[in-house]
Image (cartoon, rainbow, N blue to C red; front, side, top):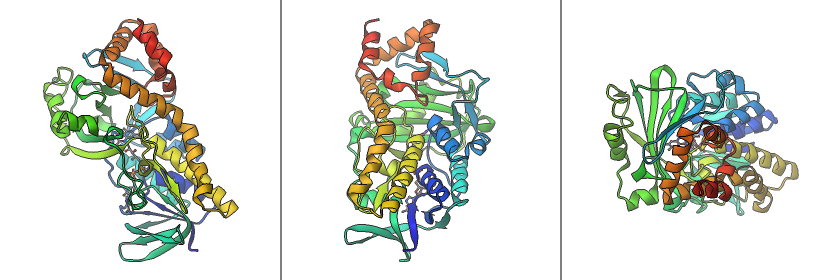
Length: 399
Ligand SMILES: Cc1cc2nc3c(=O)[nH]c(=O)nc-3n(C[C@H](O)[C@H](O)[C@H](O)COP(=O)(O)OP(=O)(O)OC[C@H]3O[C@@H](n4cnc5c(N)ncnc54)[C@H](O)[C@@H]3O)c2cc1C
């Protein structure tokens, strides 16, 4: 056998798995069809999950120094346009979140990974399967590489997930998002901005701060709603910028730095099978994006950690069967399942009862104590289980 493990994709999921396996002394081949730095269409926000994993791997300090923007809170607007700003933590504390362009963030993760594993810049064309077990990869030129286990972190259009019939998401569990970088947007702060525009719910429009006055602007919408409302996402995003009274003045002198780009977000509200004989699926390849916030980097990195730990246990037991590898799914969902479920509930409720969001924001805008109560229950923080709970929604309905 050439390697202990082969990892396809050096995005957040694959690079994280590579760091855990490499630091454990395993012989790992990490491959990616792109060389780094490379762009990835994203909102560019990273929350506590990413920082926690990097701390565990001893790579947090470099992450905190990357060019980007510290994030201390969230400004949100409700469907009727009520604005609320919430500071998640005091500026005296380390920031709970960051915005780093993925070109920068992913290169950092990749560089950390290649300190401890071998990397090859190649495109995987196929998977080697023998006696019902995945045994390795084949590149576009027909070269073969073999390993005890293959970790597929090859993103939302995963070739490996497709090969095993595991790629499909129903349209209500799938978001399409746009991104366009701008300069010259006024009124920026050290908070990320999430705007719940009424006719696009439960999709949202975001404005995230980056370094040197650059701003990441985007719009994400569930594919089912987009199809039903016959919305052209790119046009809808540009229309918000041009017509929504919250943004018109702020974008008056702004300059787009690129065309509007788009990409897919497979949601974790559709819990997909993520393992089989000799392989595991990680990150977007396993559909792990938060259905409320669209946060996928953190869950991708958490899946990288659990995939590496499962692979280490499989090597220890010399058992790479689907049954043995099912512990990956169990451990991963023990960590992320409760939050995903709560957020899926909130996402559905927000869509059915937009007036509840108006009510929540109206109350928060007027009442400082209530605003404080919300602080640790918002996207990119912890504590959202509580916000998706029946008690919380009932309390709000009763106000
Ligand atoms: C518009 C938009 C906005 C988003 N905003 C946010 C946000 O603000 N915060 C957040 O946390 N998440 C956000 N997400 C989600 C986030 O981008 C993903 O969840 C995250 O990138 C998943 O990481 P990954 O490692 O699984 O996959 P990826 O980052 O997609 O990495 C996959 C890697 O696999 C490689 N690859 C693919 N196929 C092959 C092949 N055949 N051979 C070799 N290599 C291959 C690719 O080149 C790539 O480097 C957003 C997504 C979109 C589309």
